[in-house]
Length: 375
Image (cartoon, rainbow, N blue to C red; front, side, top):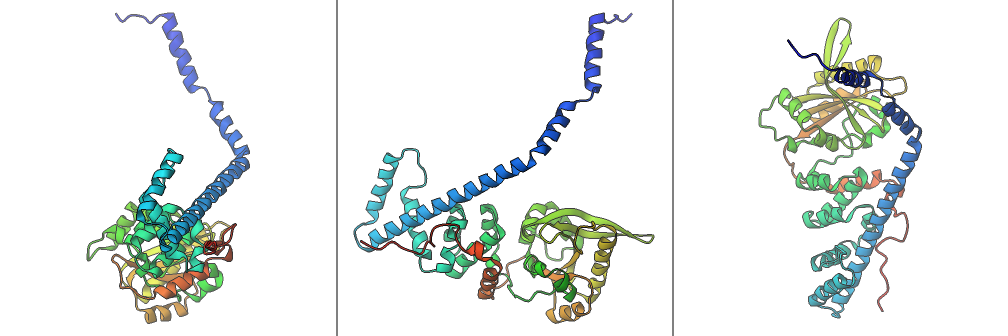
């Protein structure tokens, strides 16, 4: 006969059960309390961000000044390479625990100054990038034009050091930079600001797609590497769904990929094609954009945009197909390999045009190209 549980044990179990089933107001109160302080949290986060940017700007300015000083000393034959090593040792003794002032780093500061001292346009942007970005660009971008491009692009797109390195490895500087994008007149009219946010070509070399891949292969690879694809798309893209369902009449349809762009404040539908562009593809994309606008778009959002991402396209065929399209659409290519170098200067010009005056002028202090007079 099973032993009857004691009264104390039964009471303990009942108490535990009651506690488990009872509502827990503490978390709700905390969440509600946190919601009341959202503005304070945002103020602190903004201040921390500004403080980080200010510290970074001062650090880069210091490295520039040290690089200039070392360059002048060596150029005037006052110093040899051995003196720089002595300087590094002296700094280590005077500031124990202070990192970043080793002999190799001091020579990198000299290289930093000598590389950009004659380029006033670039020098105005140098303080907006962390020192790690500059080391990557100096070490991996070989030509002056390439370095200029990556400084501009990293500033505009706010690339992390990891993304900057990927862009350099993948040859972003070599991609097609035509200023005229393959967009419909409706897109230019309803979303003129989208021309700076959407690209002609997207580099998908990180997918490692085999030759002869299918649309299912492309779609699956993009989902597996969604984070990297979002970075390639650019800032402000947020993922909404894959094979996004829309119903029209009694029929069900699925859009390959749907995103929301915070800056443009609209949904962006991506239709994937692994073959050369065909005019008929635009009809399907326009249908999807219309369905999003009628049944998915929120009242406060702007009209949706459609992007047809295809393996290759004939520009003249695209131009004819888009001319009479009333839907805000764009045709872009995806690349799984590095294209030949072309139109770098056009891309640099485009990047300079996209950067606002505030982004090309330091917050404080004169530009770094202003050197101190020699004694």
